[in-house]
Length: 422
Image (tube, rainbow, N blue to C red; front, side, top):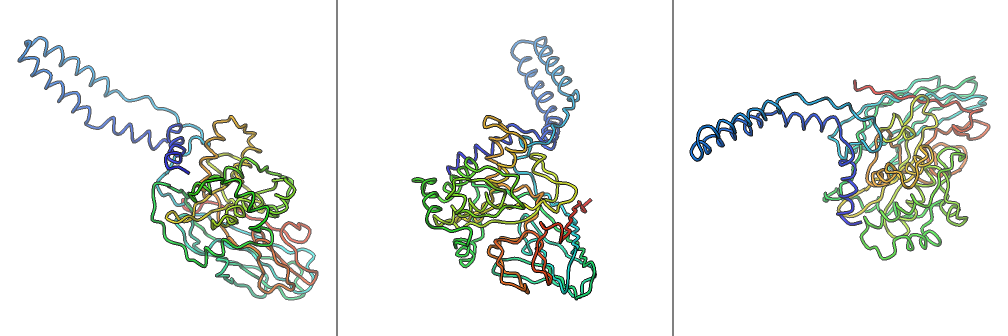
């Protein structure tokens, strides 16, 4: 990806959007004593020159014209109403602005027999420039509960155990998480170098995301002769956006079976399917990449369909990021482009879609909270050895076996979120 192309893409937002803050700044600059300098000082200089050359009358005429200009400039400007929020009115790179959310989750097991256990993925425990986990607290009729950390997967999981005989096992979890929008700037290098063991893990194949065969052949065809890793990532992102389709009938976040998608030619699914396709293609040509599973918690400034309100029990969403030397991790969200195309009925000629495609390469709107990047997850304390492709929904087990939050007859799961920073 050429630097000038990225700067041009970034400039689109600032050219077609006018934020209230920028308008206020321009007005303040217009109302400063610059009028005194341009009117009084300049007219006085003109008057002196005119008096020495052509006489007092011409100097007075020029001075009166300058005074008239000054009086006209001093009149208050008409107030311009703010534009409605949409993808084309998003400020290109706003100043840091943290938002703190209180997230309340309630889990109830129904028709549970014998001992029971619940696992709940928590927000990422490592602070980043775009997310900080502040606290967790919980209550319920469980016998014991706690948090365990998987340092390899960089994942925290809450668990609770109920003894036999509890009629209706219940859990309430409250978390506080702060977020701010995440931006990638191609003009700035010098990112913190990632650890080698992390980069190696982000090149590995998994059960559902292999890196050989049709995955590698597809990626090589997509990048062609492009050598720069940022440009390679951009080419893969563009290809995924252009060739995938969002399927609202798929349960949860999707399955993320990249081989099945490419073998059948049906590149459809939900966020996990689309994000993991991007990840697999990157890994197959030697670019470290990973999915980031999480949940939407607020409305969106881009499109209404990219935000949430009310019960967030089905608001889970997967994004992705890839690593390049000098820049670090670059965020992308190809699945939200496909979601906006479907839900907002955007056409290829729509200017909003053009902006959105460019924006979501290198930008995460943090009305979303990241949980983890774990794949092929083995739950600690599980009664069977079933491996999960990823962990974004709560899981539970009883003497009847394991079940997740999508099994509404066995598990009730509700989530709400609210701003608590004033």
